[in-house]
Image (cartoon, rainbow, N blue to C red; front, side, top):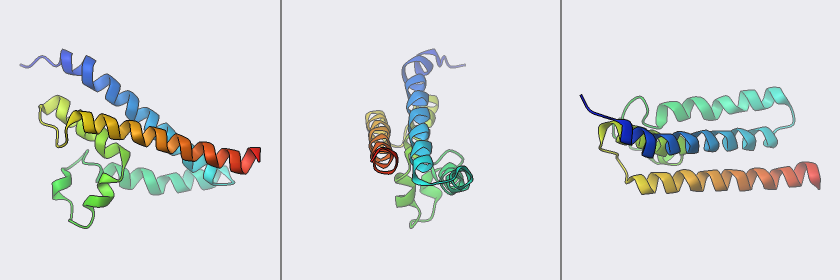
Length: 124
């Protein structure tokens, strides 16, 4: 039996935090892009469900059709799922530094776009 204590404390906790923050900022981006609450709920499903199935969480990205792989790499959850898989199986698809860097970049980009939309729609 393997001891995953080091993986949990050093890799999983920051990965889960970045996944949560990027998901929150994606939700913020969707919420400030629409005018009604029900539109945000409906619109968010167009992002959430495909992202769950294309991120490599349930099956490897290599098994996706070639034309879907670029879309998969454009989703923030892909990099979070890679960190989670890599920390448990000790073999991430991408380097962990790249995964964390891209997750952080998604957080910054989604926050910036959301802030711009808030300023344009509500503060201007």
